[in-house]
Image 1 (tube, chains in turn cyan, blue):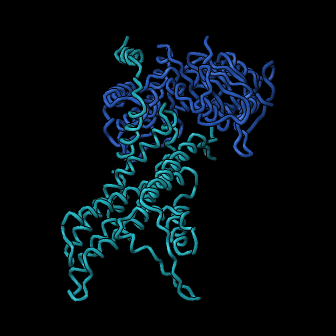
Image 2 (spheres, helix red, strand yellow):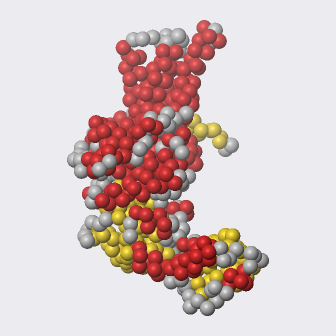
Length: 293
Length: 305
């Protein structure tokens, strides 16, 4: 018997691989996804875009004279709430979460995964946690750096109250990343045009619903994100002034409270993740070129 | 022989395209060749066996169970897809390792198993190189390694010889035969009869989504050999050469082209023996012999009409 034959015999008759359970499956999927994400060039682009707000307070401090200067607190609130949480978190979700499942379908590597005896939910969860980890790191560093940059402006510094505010914004950022991520991941599984639909919903519908009179803003994720913002930020959003050709009107928003908003977000996140798993289980990854043989 | 796969009146269609049509068959243990031209439904049958597709009609059982979303079933299967697609920016080792981790193996087990499987397909020297730098044959071997790594009871190899050089093919034939010798069941698909003949004599013939024949390869070879073959002989004097064949019972038709004799025969072996003898005796000026019907597609077409 040759070495190679005995080697094969030894391998095949070795103990069967152990099945280490659901957490191990999630960790496997998480590790694989992280490895792929950190090697993609788009992570550099995403980080670059997310770190841009840091430059604004620095430029303000450098270019404006003290009599026209904005307060550091007001600048930090505006940048974090309006730009980082309401604009950049959906962007990060579109950047990474949309392709969490869709990437494997598009690159035709999905049969490798779906022929492993891994729970579909564990695979999706692992991938989602990998996205959340990467996006949270980028977002948290961006918020922390923006805070540091804002301390160069008037009346803002490293006191306990402000640091608590930073912590609150980071928590809101994580909730936003989770909710938007679950939404875009679902789109990536259910639709062939997830980016188009994602942009239309996140930057089109959400903006529109905020100015349409009535309660349609309840049909957005942003409504619940805004409801868990720090109270100082909430005060800014009580009334929205809308200018139209027929005149100016004010839309009052209903504050649903931080607990209710958190519960609503959790419901959205769990529901969308569940639908993603369901979609993955039911989906057949058939395409025209799969009929070849 | 124990039945591993049982297919009952199985049909699968995608829109108006019928990939499998009312297929019924049983596949037992050992090495089985799935033979058919492009579009025969081989890959679709694999995907149905793996539970990636749901049957449009009929049923499929793998080791007695419905494979769709069945993790217990998948635990016993290894699959090497035909498509040449991989995760970007990964080495061969990482590819097998991460798929092992997603199989549910621990870090240690996944590493060990990946190294062993890669060694079996003789890729250890290159396992830390990016897959992008691999040749087609190397990529094929890494795909086999990921399928082998979990020591599956049933290995499904979709066109595993595609893109391999002659030496790579010989190694692949040898590996599949050895897997069979070690008691593993392997289903290997190909559109080339010769490739299947090298690894098994147990064949399932598919054509346009239907079962054409199933059994020992010799029986199927006989079946194929019984259909008229067209043999073209380039020679100096075709008319003189034709005299050796026109009285033969197996000759169906003789045709002439410039410096060529075209024989349609029911018994190509007899014809080749005669031609060899004529060539050795140097009684005829034979320059070249070619069998235009060697293409499996035309054989299948003949068998279905």
